[in-house]
Image 1 (cartoon, rainbow, N blue to C red):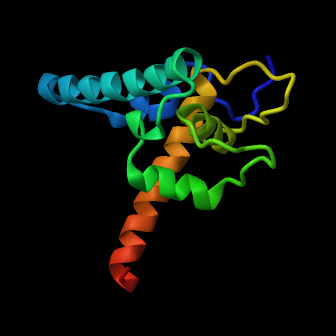
Image 2: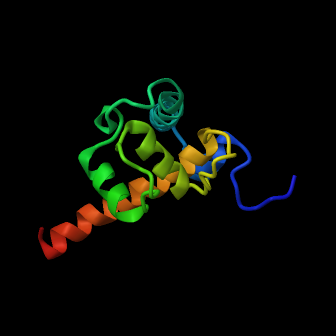
Length: 133
């Protein structure tokens, strides 16, 4: 398989190998954090399949919804802003093309999109503190 800069294994996305932790407690804390992150990505992927019409606040914060509204353009036919609508926007941040013939986004593309969204939302919050709201 050709390498296109896409993580090939679960540890690559979080750069687990680069942590170089030296104590069991620190490693335990890192694994706990990775479990929470993995659960959220998997949960969001499954919600997109099982509860697409749920309100977006079920899985996303107001900041995340606001950033997605400003950052990812809506499709012309997007009427209802459901959870699935926003999860597709997250997937698009991760490289998902959202064509009619494409299968639903998977965990890897959701991970990449959520990672980008988190960085952008954090930047927006920090930037808002400097310039004021």
